[in-house]
Image (cartoon, rainbow over all chains, first blue to last red; front, side, top):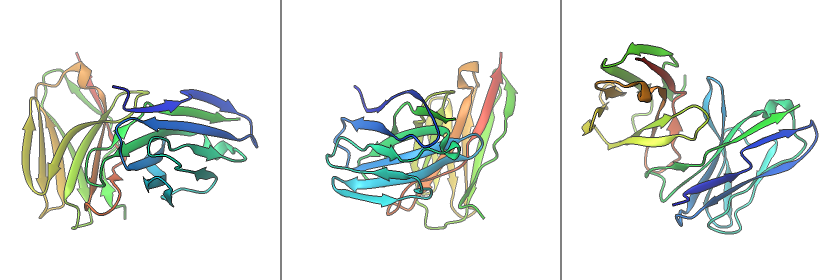
Amino acid sequence: NAGVTQTPKFRILKIGQSMTLQCTQDMNHNYMYWYRQDPGMGLKLIYYSVGAGITDKGEVPNGYNVSRSTTEDFPLRLELAAPSQTSVYFCASSGTLNTEAFFGQGTRLTVV
Amino acid sequence: QKEVEQDPGPLSVPEGAIVSLNCTYSNSAFQYFMWYRQYSRKGPELLMYTYSSGNKEDGRFTAQVDKSSKYISLFIRDSQPSDSATYLCAMNTGFQKLVFGTGTRLLVSP
């Protein structure tokens, strides 16, 4: 029972580099989300998707991009990494808006 | 004012104590209320899910919703060291995305 799988688990980036955080779910969920979690700040929504081909901005989208070409995959792209993007990133999915969201184990990103 | 307010803690209790974790909210349209538990360096996992007002019990855990006061609680009976984690409340109207509290860190000492 894989659920939501995120890769990589850890990454160190230099300022200005780019990378893609991968997220895959095997529950056939329509809704997928990317959050970042900073100490004492809770979960902040970066982007979300309500189905393949449909994405929308959350609270803190600047510096990030997403795509949703399939139901299963929802990668998050960081262009021109900045120290402010040092955080733990969580991908999540849910069947509908008002049902349980399942989370991945997170990607711990440090930008130096 | 944040939509959902939650005391960050930490809340320290001895093993066996009854723990009360709380959130207040401002949006009266919220109908679905959840509690997530997050262990250190792990993703959040759903602990309790309630719809509208009332109580829901699951083992040592009881979730309580008071919509008139815009206040939700999670009670943990006979707390164990393994309950040490951060507890996040979350809620939504059913037509929008989940809104999370910032989380309360709970420490249960043996």
